Structure formats: structure tokens, C-alpha cells
Length: 292
Image 1 (cartoon, rainbow, N blue to C red):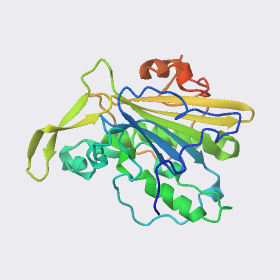
Image 2: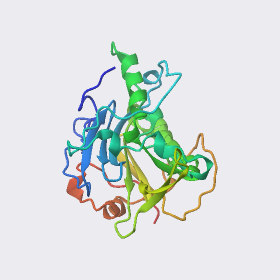
Image 3: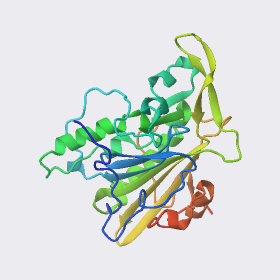
């Protein structure tokens, strides 16, 4: 299925015409060259210097009949055909971490982590004539390298998985019409030296200091949904800084209450950390709950 730049993508009015949650309509400072990449149900603001998503918006519909389609029996990662660098002289392939950067074997602590979760954007309206195509396109789009980032293996299977499971639980149990909007992104400490790996070249079998992989100091997710007449939001912030140790527990399911979310912070703290002003994120509601 061929796709063109700008096809579909994140819809700001997904939760209602009067509940627009800005992403690309806002003038968000990406702090570096940042490409806008649209796909099925989601849009990426891709930071080219670090080859990682800076901020992504995804529309989620967890209605059971919207997820009852044939799933792909195979999968493969690939370069993103919708990625057009802000500098037309640069090749898109040179600005994406591909399989080469994830071949360090057992000595590499980082997994290929999805920013926009594959399982959540894999949906389609069964009333549409091409519903199966939409469902399959979402599966395919989630596996482009622009949507992949280095996650420490323990972090990926523990803290990150726990937050993703909590978001699904919230939408499944509290959201009107099983619908939610999820923002995902990465953070690099502006006062830090940024984590970088001297890369082990699998062909030359030696470290190559001219090739480095940037690793975020933190990741975040924000879920927004309607609960009866209220618009609720939870801001999750998960540390990923160098030297952090994580336990390794695989989370498949989680049951949480509205006031017991893991790794939550306030909207104000989120804006401070990201250097974002209120006018940069129009429509984003205040946090429903965060630690006192």
C-alpha cells in the first residue's frame, strides 16, 4: 500500500470537535531540525539530529469490534517512506537508526523500543469498506525506524511496559467510547552531555568512535480521554538516564485505579522539563492526578 506524505495522521479533534488537542497546529520548538511525519492514526515530530521522535500524537480506539481484524503473521522494520528531511540534501536513510544500530548482541543493553505503541494504533472502523487495509497499514506504519528508539532492555520490559499497560487499562475501563489520545516523546537533559554510545561495528568487529547513538535521558507518555463530561489527562515521566538500574519484570496486564498511576508528574512539571509554554500545547488539559 503506497503512502504519501501527509496522508491520514494524528487528528486533533479525535475526541470531539470542541476538544481539539494541538500537535502540528501549535508552534512547538523542537530545539533542532524536526520533521513532521504522518502515518495511520499517528503523527511524529522527528528530531533529526538525534534520530529519535521528540513528540508524537496518536489516536486510539479500543472498541473491541474496531480491533477484530486479521493481524499480520510476519513483521519487519524498514526505513520510513514518509520521512522527508528538513534539509533536502540529506538522505532519509542517514537520519534513522536502522538494524545496524541494534546488532551489538548480548553486550548491547538497548532494545528496539516503539514510541507509538503498535498494539494501540492497530484499529479500524469496521463500517469502512477498506477497514482491513487501514488496520494493516497501522501495523506496518508502527514498524518504521522513525518510530523506534533505544530503550534499555530492563526499562523496556518493566517501567515502560507498566506505563503502556496502565494507559490501555485507563482507556478500556474509563474512556467514553473507548477512545483516547496519547502523546509520546523523548527528553535530553539540556544541562547534560547527552548519552552516546561508541558503536561496535559488527562487520569490522571493533568499536567505531566516529559512529554514536544518542540515548534519551527520559521518555514520557500522556494520555487524554473523556470520562463522562470531564476531560482527563495523565502525564507519565520515566527516567532513562545513564547509570539508572531497573529491575526486570515483564508486565502483560495491570489493574490500576485513577488515583494510583505509576510515574506521573504534573502538567506544569512536564512543561518546565520540556521547555514548552501553555500556548504551545493548545487544548491539553491539566493533570488529573500526580504525586503531592
